[in-house]
Image 1 (spheres, rainbow, N blue to C red):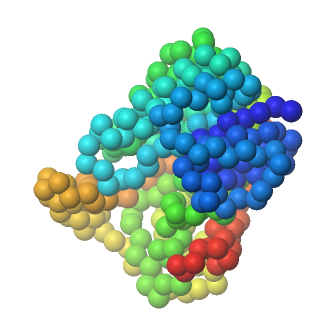
Image 2: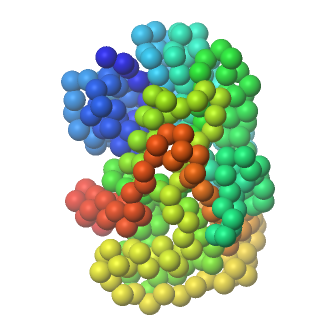
Image 3: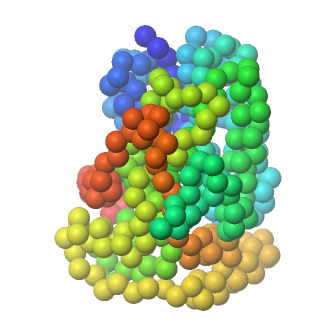
Length: 324
């Protein structure tokens, strides 16, 4: 039985990936901060390990075949790049070399689509495009990029693949994380939306893509795991249809978002952590679109409709998210 070590096993992607790996007959070792926070299904082939990304994993990885590194610092409110670098760059590099030392066969690093160059609705970005504004100014994207470059420059010591998911939606969004966009429009009489857009993907498809990377992906390659490019307006229209609701839809002009971003920069200058920043507001005004041709042709990916991702997320929130 092949074994897989997963970091961030209790997150949105980690839980979905864990379930799919177990279903396909893998033994899973899942790194979590607190076992009690894992809301996935119990399984005799699942071993949860409590720990921190900076622990020494050489004993754990001795008999592991594959490592999937998901855990990351994704918060958008931190003030210093060093905080992102410590977790997203340094911890990733340490884990990579620990895996290589233990003769792990393959290391799959879950990065972000935002380290690649986004395109428009008419001309989406792909794996060969270099990132550009506003994402090059994002501390989160910068820290992920540093980790990517180190891993690929050392791919000769261990098979290495980088996956670049776009915006994931689905069940087991326990924080919630990306599902906040659904909560922002669900059961609302008025829905405010920015002028930009992004690529959305079902988290189950990302989990499937990672397993395909383990099985048939080419070492040293990048794979965008992406599905549908949607404006925020069109996304909320899909949400309204799935949730059977008819709120008033109001567009937030870019100049309003940029003013909010300037206010956020003032707060940040005073040492106050906030999601408001010029970078984040510019991103909301941007149509950051991507294509999935490579994952389809090389990995044989088939993507679920975004309506299903929205439905699965809503059903999870209805059942398990106690604050709703």
